[in-house]
Structures are given as C-alpha cells and as structure tokens.
Length: 134
Image (cartoon, rainbow, N blue to C red):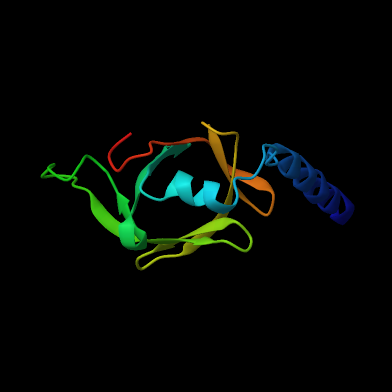
C-alpha cells in the first residue's frame, strides 16, 4: 500500500511539472523593461482572474477596475511596483498582502508572459502603453 501511495505521488508530481509551461520567449531586459512597464497598464487574465493594473508615476500600482468615475467599483491604489535592473525583474508589493516577483518574456509588441524561476505564471499579457483600462 505504501509503495502504491509513493508511486502515485511521484507520478502526479511528474505530470504537474510537465503541465507548467516554461518561459521560452526572450526575456525583456534593461531599458526595454522599464519602457514597457512604466506609465502603462498591463492587461492579463488567468482563469477567472482579470488584471488591469496601472503602473503610475512614483511606482504606484493601481487597479483600474471600472474606472475612476465609477461609483460602485472605482480605480484605486493597490500597492507599488519596482524594477530590479540587476536581474531584470519586476516586483509587485500589494498593500496588506504578499509581494510577487516576475521576469517578463516576449517579443516586442507582445503578448508577454510573467514568469517565476523559469516557469510561466501568466501568459498572453499585453501592455497598453498608457494609463487607462484594457
């Protein structure tokens, strides 16, 4: 019985490892990473989650939601963001919550992938080049 359980765990670990895609496109680095992110809104989805996060001046990170004039679900600041020029990553610091660090991969014009330790976490992301909604 123990052998069956161990074999099942090993098999499932192997399958789940293969299901997670590797970041294969070229990593966005240096000034190209800063130009892509600063002053831009990232548009991305993963499952039922949808992001419209604005990278505003002063490293402010805002969730667009339904826009600043919406009375029910207005835009609001959700944290800050920072680019590490040494390892070419972007870190998101969410107010009252966790932080996440990603490398950004993709060819100029997108779409882009957000990756952690070489594994793709979010795919198909786009950057608007402006502060607004998607």
